[in-house]
Structure formats: structure tokens, C-alpha cells
Length: 375
Ligand code: SF4
Image (cartoon, rainbow, N blue to C red; front, side, top):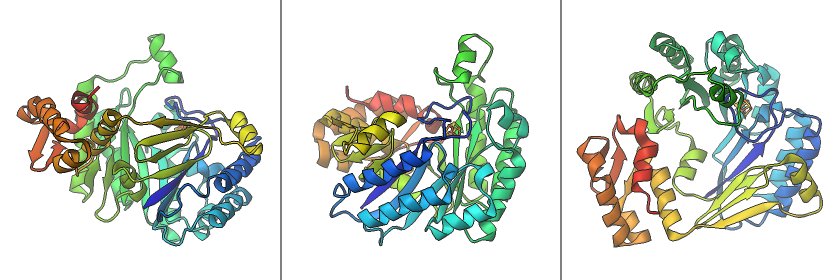
């Protein structure tokens, strides 16, 4: 099994919290699409012998691509890879791009899942975050998609927004569930240094909510999702049964994927690779026939830490029999020792052979994982 991830590094405008790799200069979009098509050709043998199950277009904003650009990429994809076993084809999209016509075009290309960057149903919050859409566009695009039969829809929502009270958060959540979506990804607002919010923090003009406020909103999220029939299967992800994100689940389970486009990461057991995160340099290299890729071979400790970090965040947790088999007895002993205080405090649960995070432990996932790491 394997997946292919595409990074489309363009956005209409910069959201004030975002530190992903993207550019708002759209003039060389077509050139970049040609480079992506060529990268597919240059890397067509990397997944030889593997069954491609998932295709994922993320970014940036893939929904900024026009019909001609989509066809160029999808044709190259079909020419270079066997897509006959693809089960899930996801496109990340922003509400202001998703007209009925655009949605139909995506559907005709084979897209069967949308991940829509709604972030909030509150216009004040959307404006504050510098999102390019409003709440009404978010509502309408979901309805348009459902009307044409594109019903496997995930949306993103942000909590921990300064000044957002629990009532507004609950209203946001209920609005999402009332739309009959099948999946929700929800993240606490984090302030990254090289962003508008990061600069405001440095100047003391932005204050983020206390941890207790964000934790209360996270608990509200878990309760509301559960009451609406959604399983909390990864820290930030909630799905209806049979509607978990397959591409992301495969990633958390250590299944290989090929990353195409500037800044895209690839993974194969024991190795990580990533493309240069600079659009003009990426285009130049690919036009010359070079692959602008850096590679890191993972040490055994790094492979173990990665297994802990991705596994513990999911509902399946980490499995000590698998750790025994892949890494040996000393790693099992270390895990038991490192997690004991968290088990005693009820933040981690142990049901042989799996360790999982409790409801409260999920809010502290990063700290618990780093306690379990071997450095
Ligand atoms: S649209 Fe997405 S990728 Fe682009 S700036 Fe906003 S959050 Fe970042």
C-alpha cells in the first residue's frame, strides 16, 4: 500500500496564523504545474510494486488551480502511475473557490473526498484570521458539494481563538454537525513566530487564551463530536464510522507515501525525504531534470520515536508486541518506565498490548509523547 501527496503552494491571501509553505504570487502557477507533471515522470519508479490507495492534494490551496492546470496534473498522474486501486482521492479546498461548476469538475477528475478549510462559521473570527471567505460561502459550498453527490466531506475548525467563549465554540461545532459532514479536523490556534500573529505576540498586542480555556474547548469538542456519532480517532481528527481519512490514517500507521511539489515530504520505512520549499528554485531544478530532494536516514531511535509520536496520537495507540518485534526488549522496558507516571495519573491507558491516551491525556499528547522518546 502507498499514497501520493501533492503540495500546491499557492494561496489567495496569507492567513495570519499560517506558517505552511505557500506563495500569494500566482503568476507562475502554470509553470509550477508543469514542473509537478515532470516530477511525476522523474519519480515514476519510486512506488514500483506498491498498490496506490490514496491521492491527496494539500497546500496551500489546491482549489486555486484552474481546469486546464488540473487536467495537466491528473493526466501526468495517470500516465506515470497505476491508479486502478485508488480508494480515496482528497482535495483540500477553500470555500470561496467551490462553485457548483468547480465541484463538478473535481468530481469528474475522480475526486471523492473534500477537505474544506472552513475554520469558523463566525465572520468576525474569519476576518480576524484574514481568511479569504465568509461563513455564508462555507455553508453554501458544503451544500453544493452534497447536492452533486460529493458527500464525503471533512471540514477544519479552529478553537482557542482569543475572546471566543464556549457558547460561540459550541455553536460553531453544532453548525458543522448539522451540515451532515462525515469528518472533522479541529486544531487549537497555535502562534508561530514568522506569522502576523507571531509578530503581534512579540509586540505584546496579542494574547492567547490560557491553557485551561483551550483545554475546556477541546473537551467540549470531544463531547459534542461523540454526541453526534463521531469517533475521536486521532488527536485532531473525528470521523463517522467508515469515514476516517484513509490517507492520513495510512501515514499514522507508517505506510509509505510519495510527496510531489515544493516543500512536499515523502516517507518510506527508515527514510524521510523532502523537496526544497522554494517555488522558483523547485521549478528551475525540475526543468533541468534534477530532483531537488533532501534525504534523511532515520536512526533506530528516530524510527521508534516516530512510531510513538504518530501511534500514541491515534485511537489504536502503540502496541508493545510490535515494539518488541521491531525494536527489541529494551525499548519495551523504556516505554513501560516512561509512561508509568502518566498511567498512574490517568492520562495514559494500558490494555495489553496497547498504550492509548485517555480523554484528558489527549490534550497533553505532545508532552506525553516526548516523555516516551528515546534520545
Ligand atoms: S489558506 Fe491554508 S495554507 Fe493558505 S495561508 Fe491560509 S491556512 Fe495557510
